[in-house]
Length: 202
Image 1 (spheres, rainbow, N blue to C red):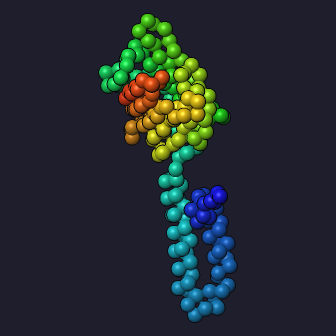
Image 2 (image 1 turned 120 degrees about the vertical axis):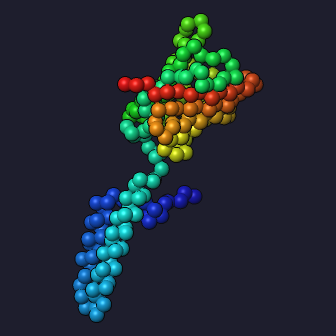
Image 3 (image 1 turned 120 degrees about the horizontal axis):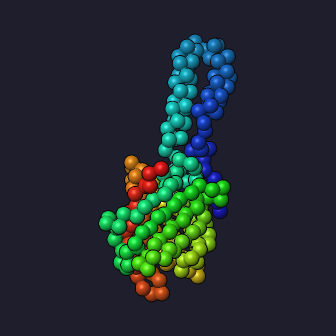
């Protein structure tokens, strides 16, 4: 059984709140005019109206950033800092990871130069809705994304419907550093890494 969010928790723009507050005052004013305490009630209604607007603005600034927007801190090109990164296996010669905003969601491309000079390119496009999507050039069959806060994304990787990899990506508060912590199993062998990327200057 699905549960719809309570109306009082839904976000409304300040303009909507203003219009609703104005309509409410128009209804209350004639009634308050007949009351000996009309002046007090009028001031009280105005306080409630202003409080509703402030609450709406506060909610707008704190609601979960689950949607893909151009202001997403992950959007951009990131270059691997090999000196600050740790790998259980071979360390890439060079790695660039790119997050692009598209109508279909976040397009994530990772280009890696390995020791022999060849380049691997892994790519997928997903939304922050935890729905599985295909991934190219990877032993993983599918991946899904979940946004836990505005600066953190958790990617789950699956093989035959089973989660075999978890990758947590976090952008620093200043927006300059991306850290990707990965743990998984491939063919029975465990692997892990902590990759630190710096934002490429444009």
